[in-house]
Length: 457
Image (spheres, rainbow, N blue to C red):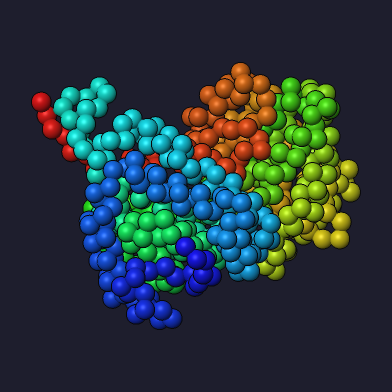
C-alpha cells in the first residue's frame, strides 16, 4: 500500500466522503454502526479466529519493520499534538506493539478460552459436559483515553479477536493513533478493516454516545473514575460494560538487589518505569520502597535513580507541562526543600534549571501519590512484610508492583499483596509493558465480552 498521511478519521468507505470535514452526529454514528455491523456479518464473523490472528499480526508487522512509515508518521503526528517527544512516542508504541504479535494473541486466547476454536464452532470444554461455543458482541464501542499512545491497539485487538465490529472514539488529547492503526489493518485486509470505524466526537456528547451505545452489545471505556461512572450510567441495560478507571502503581526493591556492582542497571530500569510517557500510565510507579540492610542504603539508590533519570531526560526529554502541572511539581519540591532545611530525614534530587525530573527521598513511609511528570518518592522499609499495611489505604486503586528481589521473596510479596487487589507483580524495567494476556484491573480481557451457548449431552 502506498503511504498517505491522511486525517485521523477512519471510516468505512461508503460514508467516508459524507463525513469528511463534517460534524459527527447521531445519524452519522447510526450509519457507521450499521455499516460495520454488516461488514462483520458478511466477513469477520465467518473468519476462523486463527485467520484473524494472522491478519492482525501482519498489520502489527507493518509498524515494526525497519523504517516503518506507519511508526514514523504516528510518532511525528502524535508528538505534534501531545506533550510527548517524538523519540519517546516511537519507543513506547514500538514496544507496545511488539507485545501484540501472533504469539501474544494466541497466548491470550489460550489463557482465557483454553481452546480458541470455541469462537468458531461448538467444542468440548475441559471439565464440562457437552459442547460449547463463545460468541462476541456484534458491535463494541471503545472510548479511548489519551494518556498513553498506542493502547487503543490492545482494545481493538480484543474486539476483533472475539469477532466484534468495533467503533472507536479517540481521545481529543491523542486523536492520531487509533485511526492509523485501523488503516494499517486495511492495508493488510480491507474487508476486515471494514468492520472497524474511528469517529472523533466530542467527549460527553450524550446524543452521539446514546446512538453509539444503542447500536452496541458491549462498551469498553478508559478514563478517570468520574468519566467511567458517567459512561456506565448511560449504557443501556443488557449492554456489557467494561470500565478501566484510575489506578496507581509502585515499585519495591529488596535488600539483596542493592549490590554496588548492579546499582546502575537497577537505577536505569527504575528510571525507565518512572519516566516513560512521563508517568501518565496506570502502571507507572508513584513510590519506590527500598528495603534496608543491603550493601547500598535506600538513600544511595535514590541518588543513583536521580542520575539515571537525568540520563533518560537527555535521551527522551519530558513533555510540555500545563501551568497547573508545573505548579504542582514546584510545590512538591518546595515542601521537600523546607523539610530538608528543618533537618528532617529528607533529600531532594532535582533537575537543575527546571522541573524535568524530581526524586524525593524521605523516611516517612506513607504512600504519597505523585503529581506525575517524572516526580517519584523513594522510601525505606525494614522488611517487605511492612508493605501491605502501608498501601492498604489505597488498595482499591492498586494496579502493578514492580519488584527487584529474589524470586522466592517476590512470590512472598505477591502473596501478601494479592488480597489487597494488586493484579500484577513484575520485574522493574517492565512495569510500562504488561503482556497482552495480563489481568487488567484484576479481570479478564475477552471473557467479559463473550456469551456462551452449550449443547447438553
